[in-house]
Amino acid sequence: MNDINLYNLYVEDSGERIDRYLADELPELSRSRIQNLIEQGCIQLNHKPCASKKIAIKEGDQITITIPEAEPLQLQPENIPLDILYEDEQLIIVNKPAGLVVHPAPGHPNGTLVNAVLAHCPNLPGIGGIQRPGIVHRLDKDTTGAIVVAKTEQAHQHLQAQLKAKSARREYFGIVYGVPKTESGTINLPIGRNPSDRKKWQLSPLKKVDGKP
Image (cartoon, rainbow, N blue to C red; front, side):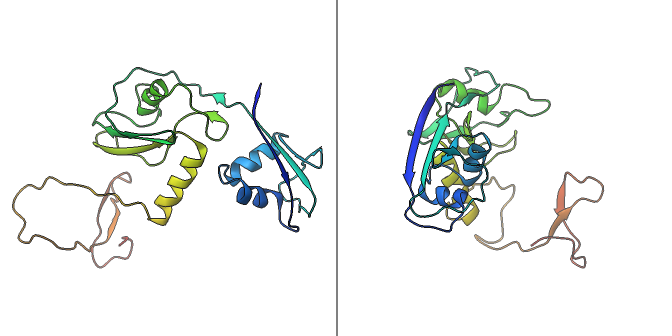
């Protein structure tokens, strides 16, 4: 396996755990990715394999990180047409049509959006050590809409953080049957699981507390 990335860092601070320090110094690598690299023996501390993610570093320490080539994903690229709304080196935004499954799953081992992106982007650098596209969020099979797919680990990490912090805004358009009485309004009713079918959600009785706002 050929090494494609090599980092050499000299510590100027002390007392911090090595995984936290590296996550701050190398934002393109997630903390979980750094911990995996430590487990794989890809991180050396003062020219010796780092034995633990909890080791406290000190001023003057030298850290060497060897990032191995991304392993190929055990999925076949498929030439499925994509309606691309935007694309650059970090991400791709696709208008997913109804009927297309986003990610392989039981019952849908192929013919998915991931298979299509693998064919469209054959030279992905890898996410988490695997040569794969990063699915930032998902849409149901029968839903049509824009979906963002990260090409790099850094983009995947930052996009997920934006969705978690709700700093990324999404707008939806709905087709309404009938004529609403007002042009705007708020629906504020509790939603809970259907007691007969746990896969479905419904409006919960107002007197119950099992519903979520």
